[in-house]
Length: 211
Image (tube, rainbow, N blue to C red):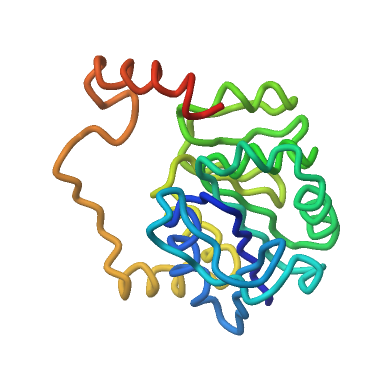
C-alpha cells in the first residue's frame, strides 16, 4: 500500500507528521512525501523542512492520499497542477484524506462536493463555498473520504483509518506503542471549551490569516 503525503510551502508540520507516525506503521505500507518538485519543503514558520522524495508526476496512483493544511493552503487553492494531481490520484485511491485546512484543497478540486467534511474550526464555513456540508466533528468519514479537524486531530484520523485498514488490534497496538494518551493541561482545545474571549480573538484574527 502506497501512502502519499502531499507537501506545499507553509504547510503545518503536525498535519503531515501526525498521520505519518500512525499510518506508516500499517502492514506493508510504503510512505512517500510528494510535492510539485523534489527537495525540502518548509513549514509555515520556515523553521522546519520535510523532504519530498517524489514529484507529483512520480506518484500518479497512491492507495492513500493525505493532504495537510496550513497557512500555505490558501496559495494552492487555484494551483491547477496540484489540484489536477489530487483529482488523478483520487480516481484510483482507496482512501483520500485531509487534515485541518487540507480539506479546502480537496474541496477546491471538486472531490468533496455534496459530502460531509470537517476542517480547522476557523475554516469550517469556507467549506460551504465549495458545496460541502461542514461538521464540527473531529474525524469525518464519508465514503472513502476521511477529513480531520485542526492539526492534532490528524493523529485521531490516522488511528481511525488504521483500524479500518489493519484491524482494531493493530491500531490499538500502534496507539499503545506511540503512547497516544492525551491529557492536556488546559480544557481549551475546541471553541466549545476555550474561554469565549479567546475564541473571539482568534475569529477576529482569522479574517486576515485564514484568507
